[in-house]
Length: 457
Ligand SMILES: NC(=O)c1ccc[n+]([C@@H]2O[C@H](COP(=O)([O-])OP(=O)(O)OC[C@H]3O[C@@H](n4cnc5c(N)ncnc54)[C@H](O)[C@@H]3O)[C@@H](O)[C@H]2O)c1
Image (cartoon, rainbow, N blue to C red; front, side):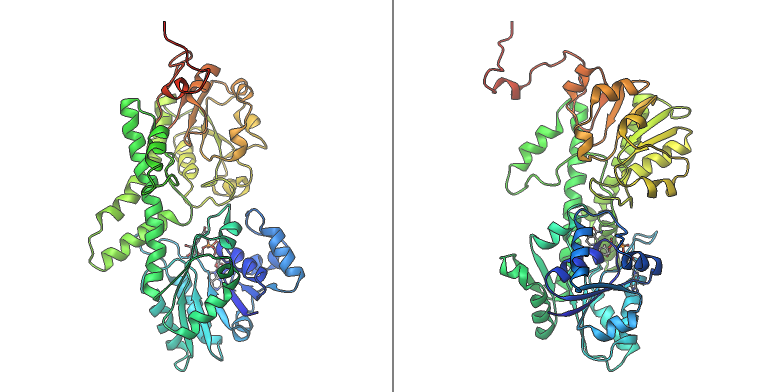
């Protein structure tokens, strides 16, 4: 059992803290946000993440997980500090390192004996040295090792990702620190999770390079979808055909409204900025984000093509969070769409299973409803922005009756164009041909299914 201090109680800090406690460690999670810690101490979970409340409750009850604003005490009494603070983008695309630097200063200020400082925040290559230098500046006799242990969890499946990761990456410059951090992850090591043990800089780069690659796959398939639209090709068939190539793989090959969230946009921009600062030309990395920005705008233009001018129209948006199973609205494509619609004089009605409270704070004019059918009532068009599972099973005839006009822009390719046409929707999706009722009743996929082949006249 190790004594661990986790700095930052956001998505990564809370999930890491709860999981590390579940591994049997004594974990104190600290934050500078006092009301947040108050809520956590009262048993409230300030974010929506499936399974987190139960995991936190169990470990709190067993005395392994606690929350505090007493950063001094938490640092003094731990062996290992995990930095899990935010690293947002600056307007220049550079990474705002102020929270990481402040965390490093606190460690220097309060530490009394040897500490292992583990950087779990996503940070530009070279940050390990920077954190070490800041601590040494505050406390010249500091006995520390800085380790990089980037986090790969995805919001919405964060606990499963933490407990069953594809790999654990640990970058260290001392054997003592490396062994201690491996020991923290021993339960995973025992269940054969691959460990990538490397130097600090390479570990930092692994995280940026991984996120840039995942984002690149999304931007790439979005561009392919846009080309498909010009030729009536179907991007879902194209993605399947590509994804079965093991060198490509099927994941992150879904065309849609562009990526969002607190990681891909800022990490791709952060990597581009790191390259710029180092004087390295990285045109592919730069293009990933530029393509994503265009894709989001393309959704707005698709909507304009479907309904004309936005002024005076009522638009129903289903799904606000940047992806399903999270309440995170950071960089969510729906936020950009709503902003433009409101600015151009539309009325926006919305429904999301968990993210409406926060969205209302961002857009006081947004009208939120308790279910998709009420949200759709009387709207001129419905726009599906996030593919929550409950939207997959919606009663579409009921939606059609609720809408003032049966028009639907599906930014996530959730529905079948033929079924939608047969139901009487004016239906537009991403990279898939539009269909009219009775149009293209069969496709090649139908012909090879037993009993479905009907010879043509
Ligand atoms: N959210 C994700 O899915 C995800 C996944 C992998 C990696 N990451 C990375 O992990 C890091 C944290 O992300 P997040 O989404 O959890 O951030 P977040 O913004 O949700 O939470 C950060 C928390 O840190 C606190 N904080 C800031 N300065 C502090 C300090 N000096 N001491 C103590 N607490 C402090 C803030 O008050 C906030 O509660 C980022 O670098 C992010 O890129 C995030």
